[in-house]
Amino acid sequence: MKIQKIKLRRMQLELKDPFQTSFGTQTEREFILVEVYGDHHVGYGECVVTSKPLYNEETVKTAWHIMEDFLIPILYEHNEIHHPDKVRELFKPIRRNNMAKAALEGAIWDLYAKEKNITLSRALGGNKDVIEVGISIGIQETTDELISVVGKYVNKGYKRIKIKIKPGQDVSTLRKVREVFPHIRMMADANSAYTLDDVEVFKELDKLNLMMIEQPLSHDDIVDHAKLQSVINTPICLDESIHSLDDARKAIELGSCKIINIKIGRVGGLTESKKIHDYCEIHGIPVWCGGMLESGVGRAHNIAITSLSNFILPGDTASSSRYWYEDIISPEVIVEKGLIKIPHLPGIGYSPQESLLDKYTLERKELFRDQYVV
Image 1 (cartoon, rainbow, N blue to C red):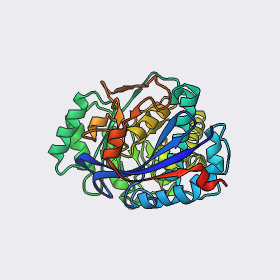
Image 2 (cartoon, rainbow, N blue to C red; image 1 turned 90 degrees about the horizontal axis):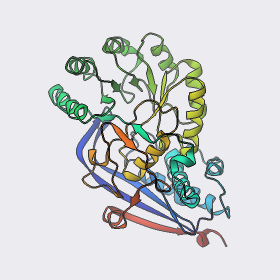
Image 3 (cartoon, rainbow, N blue to C red; image 1 turned 180 degrees about the vertical axis):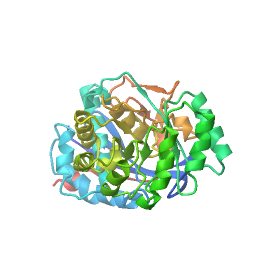
């Protein structure tokens, strides 16, 4: 593949409903869309950053800077990229900035699959025709409202219900949900809101037959999570703590978790996601794909990676209409009875619509090969 041009778009979509977690409430989604132009096709990737560094250290502004001033020049230093796996090695000298790296690498994976006339799923080694998906529900104002929202998505057939929690809205809230829905697959997501001083909270949650408790302790911890996992039966799932295969290896060796959430942006791309997936599969650790309120482009990448064999737990890839009045792809992502069909068209399998891209673009910049290569 020879990259001729890369276009960056700063975009913004308005959420249908506010989405509240332990670290804040979102009413809109600002992100960067990446378009990588080859000789005959365009590959699309999504940088799943936010405006503020609340989930990790990256923001829309920093990711744009890192891509434009460091990562894209690295790509243009090489006349051709024969396989997307190479991108991870090219970007290795740049520390962290995983979401910026993942956006460019993802677009190159899409371009590669299109040039090979195969689906992104197949290019990654996926072996599924459909995937199971769950739903992520933000913190609600009242428990009654939460129960109503849970009921709505249970009736839609979602295969797993994830409920955000924070101190003061945890045990009693989930206990009431469990009383109303005694048999659903339910999990709690704490987004790093607790410490080991809260161990009694987790012992109470342990009684609610949860699938898992996601990232209960600090965003960069694997040691205290091992201590917590040793005193509760409910599997701990690590999210924010895992940024690489090496992080996953250390967490598994320490006994810090029994499940790992793989987010493509958080770990630096599809290649690293595959490596974590393979390592976890060998060591009997199930994985699932987390969500970052992606547009349809990021959602399509999530669908493709979830087609790999060890993604055996439902992920967060809900339908487009769950979050957006209109998505930027055609067709939109559709969930039927908790299932998404893997698309059969080359690449990501969905077509970004130029009119909608333009409608929601706040800023754009085109970066040509000849700007960097003399």
